[in-house]
Length: 409
Image 1 (cartoon, rainbow, N blue to C red):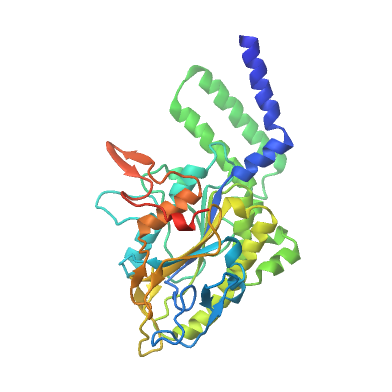
Image 2: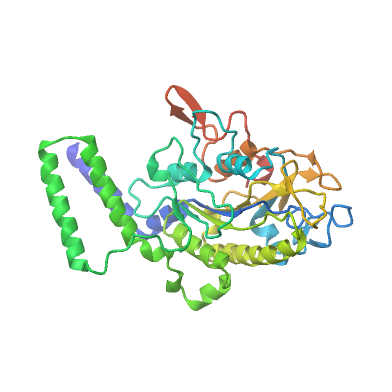
C-alpha cells in the first residue's frame, strides 16, 4: 500500500510537470485589474449619455457594436468592444456622495461599523485567489496623482493581503538587491540562513519559526519579482500600444503583474471630481481611459488572459445630472454607472436603466453589495462564504446581497 501510494504521488508530480497541465493551471489562475476613476466620473459623459435632455451636456451618444446600446462619443474605441467582453451597469444607487464615505463603501461593499475593520475588495480578492507559495505580491495599488490618494486594507484578514501601495514610482522601494551585494553573496547569505533555520527547527518546534521562514522566503520571492514592475523590459511596440501616459504605462505594468500571478492590481486615474469645467475635464480624461482600457482588453484577449482576468471601472460615485453655474457636475450617488469586462462576464449587456434625465434609477437598482456579489461570482468566489470574526460570521459580500445574473456569463 505504501508503494502504491508513493507511486501515485510520483504520478501526480509528473503530471504537474506536464506542459499541458501547467498551461491549464495557469489559465485557471484568475485575477482582477481595477481601473479606479478617482473623484467620481460622470456617467452621462461615459456609459449612460442623455443626449437632448436638459441634463445631457454637449456630447453626443454613439452606437456601440451592440444594437440598441449607445454610450458617450468620448469613448469611441470602447463602443466597438462592448459586444465581445464588456457589460455596463447603469443603475447603481449607493446613496453616499462624499469622497470618504463613498470610497469606503465602494472599496468594501458595505457600510462601516464601529469596531469592525472590513477588508477592502483587493484584500478579499488577494485572500481568495492567491497561491500559498506565491513569490509575487498578492495585492498592488498604483496611485501617483496627489489628489484623493486612498489606500486599501486587508482589514481583519491577515496582513499579508494588505496592498503594496505605489505612488511616485511604479518600481517599489527597497525591493531590489543592493548593488553592493553580489549575486553570490546574496545567495550564500540565504543558504546560511536556511541552514541555521533547519538546525534550529530540529530542536524547537514552533509555529512562529515556521512563520518566520515562510515570511523570509516570500520576501526573497518579492525581490526576485522586481522586473515585473519595469515596463522598460517590454518591447517598444507594446509600450506604444498602451500610449505614453502614466495611466497607460501603469496598465501595461498591471498586465505584466497579473500575467505573473498577482491576483489584484488597482490602477487609479485621477482626478474626475469635476465641480467646474466638467466637459473639458471629461474630454481629456475619457480620451485616456478609452484608449488605455481598449488597449488593455485587446492585449489581454490576444494573450488568452481575458477569460481569467476581470477588468472593472469604478469610482466613489457618479456626477449630478444637473449642471452647476461653473459648468460642472457635483457628487451624485443615486443613479450612476460602472463596467465589468472579461472573466465571467457576459459581453454586450447594459443592465439597468435610469430615467430620461438620469436623475433616478428606473429599473434594476443595484447597491454596492450586489455589485460585489457579482464580482465575486464572476471570479468563482462564493459571495455567501463566511469569515469568522471571533464568533461572528461575516459573509464575503454583505448580507442579503445577490449577484446580477444578467451580466454573468
